[in-house]
Length: 183
Image (cartoon, rainbow, N blue to C red; front, top):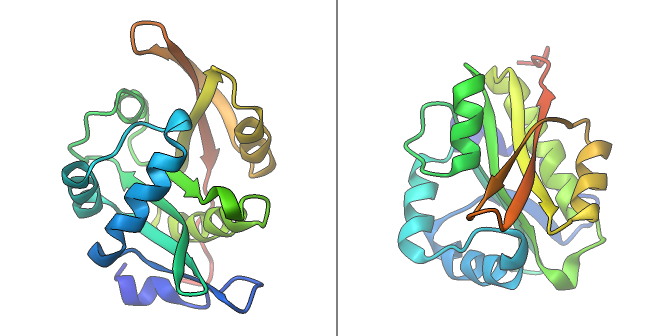
């Protein structure tokens, strides 16, 4: 599906917010957002972001008041990605869409931006024929807000793994995707 055909009516309830495809011009803002929440994410530098963006099946931002307030980046099966979590899913699912990271600016948290991005990617996954949408969140150290958020959006635990020489444990999550009847 082309970027233009993904745009659709992806505006949020807030009149000053817009979901749109990420561009290279957004990269400085995306790196700053990632750094702001790196305790829940893997670090990201410009070369890695460029590589992920080039492979992404879905890379969208929410712009509020002319500034990037949130982003979500996801990859399909078959990507050349060294993430141990992505590889875990690749060994178990033939067709999937992996949410690598979703980041909302700390100043915008609690305003539904993450939910807007998840509604958008769920519709994207259904329209694109992905059988399952996957992601992970930290169990150790705990991230109860992410656990609650993902449960609310229909994700369930399908596995766990330890990372970083036993420093971090993640819950590997999956949500079945139903094909869109409007495609």
